[in-house]
Image (cartoon, rainbow, N blue to C red):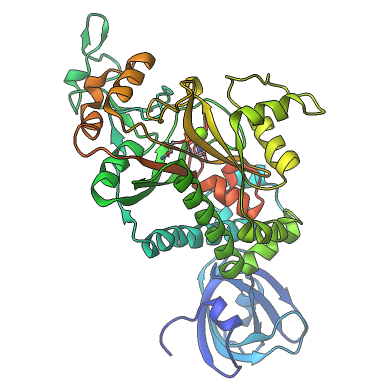
Length: 461
Ligand code: 4AD
Ligand code: MG
């Protein structure tokens, strides 16, 4: 018998009777009087395949002594299971022990806290919860590409090393090959002209600016890649390395942008409901009892929209106190965002037209001269999940705004050039992939939806 049958295929087989070869890791071993039961998992699904081994197996004693975590290969016949709880089980004829695991294996049967599991991030993918998280993550990643592919968007890989701080928040990680113990100096400052790229560079905070250039050639594009922010905020929603999906559309305004964001999020909701059902049911049962019902509503709902000005008024009129002040001109904090989406609207809401002072230089100025065509999509439990805008396509106004906020046009010559020839209205947004996964699984900490989280003082795995 050749090949390997995945546990998922075995559990969902149309009928019993097939001989198969299954490989995976032992979750539990129950040694009975007559036979021994092994719960076998290979990551292909939440469920374990029950392996039944009798004393006729050559190495029966070794099998009875297997520990949680051991790797084994089982040959056997798929039979109807007489016990309740599973349809089929594998009647073993041969069990090969591939890799032993002794009692020091940390993922023994009992439940572990997420905090503890973070300290063994190299092993946690073998647990039920993280198995589910990373299957959902993988499935969503493929759905993202399918969504844009079906709509004719070009996929562009924007650079990871860059000299531009797109969001202008000063949160770039430096990339350098200079000797940190004694870098070349010029007038008392590090001389980056002697560095690898001949200038100061860092890890990208967003692929947007390069994405815009491609939108002005291919009409509709998206990037989906890692982004990096040296933001020293230790919150459950911020990571120093996270993945972002950034579509950009030419000949589009803010309303077209919001419409795409809504269609996209609803598509992803529908996707997990249809394709990740077993894992969602696990989250619904163990993490967040309202999860499936909430996703079902969002998959069919049309999203609310509110002006920033109205949001501020609603917050000021709120029958409760916030930690951070609320005033026209100040940015919204997570507590404000969650109040708006959870209490005021009770579902996803776009907040649009923010004061220009609290938004990035590239956003299009509105005629009122004090707001820009920005949108943030807020969702219950997470707050901001998407940030986007219509871009300033007018050459003069872009330069004016850059001067106002103190950005040297020299460093962004290539970006400004896009407004010199064939400029047109265009818009886009960024969806934080980890925030999406938090939203769709009910997991409450960003550290638990990314394989190896990078946060302040943590990059050990
Ligand atoms: O709102 P942001 O900063 O927008 C941009 O970067 C734009 N260039 C996007 C665009 O218009 N093309 O980030 C977009 C999203 C946020 O809404 C949030 O979901 C996520 O990225 N995000 C983070 N996720 C995890 N950790 C962080 N530190 C994040 N910062 C932003
Ligand atoms: Mg934002």
